[in-house]
Length: 329
Image 1: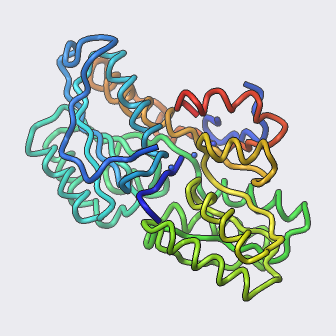
Image 2: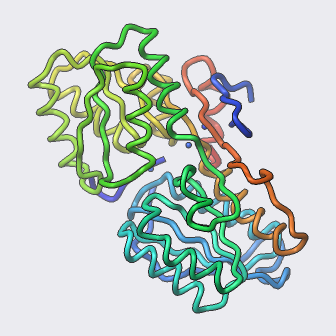
């Protein structure tokens, strides 16, 4: 799709299925960027933290992750160096560059853990603490990360699958928009565990028009598809267009949330979204490193800290919508 426009709260093993209260523009494969302004002065704590993600340019999901990380950096007086690349080898290179720069800590996504293991182990060998976020919940300890902040994607997929199974789903189409992502594959596997008739469809998530065309052709060819399950908010927007073009009556549900999807939930075009709270992932990743460096604190006590899954639907959308407008949900 064109640069992604992409955008769950639980702690420990608790799943929040209803809230009472896991994409505008992304960034090209960036050189490290230092946060400035607001809050404490950057670097006043004496710590520099590298924040490395697999963000695809234009994905609004990462705007939320980065916003959380930057707010934490301001709150703690940390100098934050953000960089990203969706290519696993290049992401590993960014981690290694942070190691070579002798940063104090590294927060990184682990969507392709096998490709990143060498770089992460290089960091730990150099005495640089690493925390994982967003992807790699089952692998973060194996690669050497101390803590993890994100959703349990298998649990999230199963939760979604059970909900649509209860609504009568027989043949959902689970749309995978990034090849090799352990998180996305876990989501679809979770859906299939609850609805055995689930079918996966691989699309090129970096090209909106290609996603729409591929989905439209599939929905036009197979009218037995009763649910479309997308794994990112921008893909859900593509699915709305594809459904219209294919005259499909399939219901649409999605993982992840942004302002546009929140509006589509309110107007009924999307049944519900599963939110993993990316802002919280970014905030906790930076804060945890600051506390580890300053006090030796270990958040989670050796277990992943879950930020989801939670359902966002018509019962709670009015409360959540304003926060999507602020880029914090």
